[in-house]
Structure formats: C-alpha cells, structure tokens
Image (cartoon, rainbow, N blue to C red; front, side, top):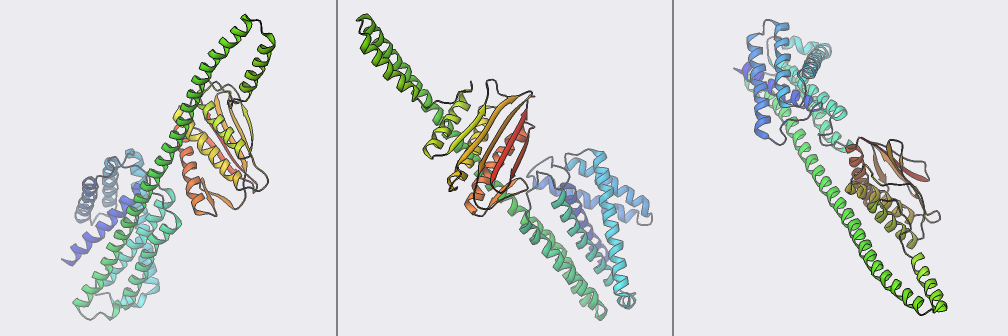
Length: 435
C-alpha cells in the first residue's frame, strides 16, 4: 500500500513539474481556466501512472509511451505543434532520468554505508526519489525563468531567490533525513520521515504557485498603470488638438473681420492707415505658436505643444522633419510614442543645470518611418533588459511605464528600436517599416 501511495505522490510532483516545464515554451490555449488545468494535470497523472504500472518490466517501451502521452496532452493544453511537444517531452524525460540517476549515484557514493544499512528497508529509496524530484523542480523553475515566454509573469532576481530558497532548504532537509535514516527503529518513524519528505515536496509547489500568483497580480497592476498613463497622455494631446482647432476658428473669424477692415480702408483710400493696420496684423500673425508644420494634424499639435512648453522652460528644441502626411502609424500610437519620448526628454532637461536641449528626428525615409530623440541627463541612468533604472524610485516608475508603452507600439508594428546612454546623453531611436 505504501508503494502505491508514494508512487502516486511522486507521479503528481513529476507531472506538475512537467506542466511548469512546458509552459516555459508555449502559451496556454485557455487562460485562467482552473478546471481545464486541473483536468490536464489529472489526465497526465492518471495516464502516466497507469503506464508505469502496466509496463514496469519493459523500460524502453514504457518511456516511449510516456513521451507520446505527454506530447499529446500538452499539445491540447498549449498552443504548440505536436512535433515541438514531442521534442520537449523527450527533453523532459531525459532531464528526469538524468537527475534520477545522478541523485542515486551521488547518494551511493557519499552515503554507501547508509545504503548498506538500509538494504532491507524502502525508506532510503523513497528519500532518494524525493530528493531527485526536488532537484528536478529546481531545474525546471530555472528553465522557466531563463527561457519563459512573454505570456508568463516576469520573475525578477528577488522573486527568483524566493522560489529557489525553499527547494534548496528542502534538499538539505532530505539529505539530513537520508543521513539519519539508518537509525530508524520502527514503522512509525519511517512514516514520519516519509511524511516530512512529501510535505516538503508539496510545499515547494505551494510556494511556487503562490509567488506566481503574486507576480500576476503585480503585472496586472502595472498594466493598469500603463493604461492609465496612456489614456492620460492621449487625453492631454487631444485636449491640445481641440484647443488648436478652437484657436483656428477664432483666427478665421478674426481674418474675416480684418479683410472687411482692409476693404473699407481701400475704398476710402486711406493708404497710410491701411499700411499701419497691415503691419500690425502681420506682426500678430508672425507671433502665432504653430511653428512646426508636417502635413499631419496630430503630429503638428503634439510638436507645437511640446515646442511651446520647451520655450517656456528655456529648453532648446532642435528637430528634423519632412512631409509626414500618410503615416503608417495610427493617431493613437503617434500620441503614445511622441508624448512619452518628449515628456521624458523635457523632464531630464529640467534636472540638468547647464545643458538643456532636445534633438528630435521624425522623417519618412525610403520604406520606413524613423523617429529618434536625444537629450542630456544628469545623475545615474542604467538601462537593463530594455528598461530605464534611475536612482530615484518615482523616476523609475514613470519612465519605465512610458518606455514600455513605446515598446508595445513598436512591437505591434513589427518595428525595431535602439535605446542607449553614453554617460551624458540618452538616445532612443525607432524604425517602423511600411507593411
């Protein structure tokens, strides 16, 4: 009876580790479906354990059948092809067997005397199997962190240490149980040892999924913050555009009145007054804020708004643009890219004591759209894994969210980007091809 219970327990742990391993290479077909995931794991456990019981005498046939079963069920669970699932299944089974044999060899080598003492007992074998499964779990988690797809919650070094710490603790605990297993005197002590070992195995899974749930919630909060900032930027830009349209309507009304006044002065032949009036009107027109014209209403509104902001803050704005009519980027995405890049550049310049300038290039070149912004900065600025990290926490949050917004837009258009700093200037360049 004990053999069946431990067999089922170890099979459960193996199949859950298998599921975690496969999830690093493919996206789930059904997200947030607990019953579907439970059915997949239950199916794996039932099928694999049945095969082990029926084919335990034929090792190679048993392994082939298990590999095919795992590949088939994982093809239903994840959005991957059967061929890829077969390769991953072979890799997992190879990893499993390698760790099993390595653990057995290591224990026999280090604790040979213990093995001899326990030749007539099953406890030593069970503990060795538990140890190998915990090592397997730690390797699988490492694979998931290293090769995990974007659909998985990102695991930073801090979370990684939390996940790994418990398996390491479990390994040392099981080794301690192995060392003291030679002193077992009765069946009750053996049951206690096995209970401790299997509780450690279960706790590893609980800790892993608990941390994963926390990371998912943190990612959701981050996504909501990104959406909030994106909506705020778009709202501000559209408000600016609306204000520009209102100004344009007022100018049109004033222009009609000016024409009527000029016609009246001409009809009366008051050329001196007419000359003075035209000079005043011309002066007012030259003072209008729409300096930048690109043949794109949205780009005009954003750039003129930011240009006026830089003038007020005594920041030099150097730009190179051409005819941007017919852009292959939606108005909403233009707002995301330009507002975030220029807002970050303006904020960086405000913290500079001497050099305050923003260089921007926005041009249609050949078969692509090129956008680049360069600005100075002061203080420590580190770029890690496509994210900006500064010495101030609030700056990290704001710039990190803005950069993620921009990168999301670039990836949606299958574009590319370069982000770097040389100790004095921060540089962000984007190239989006025409489809």
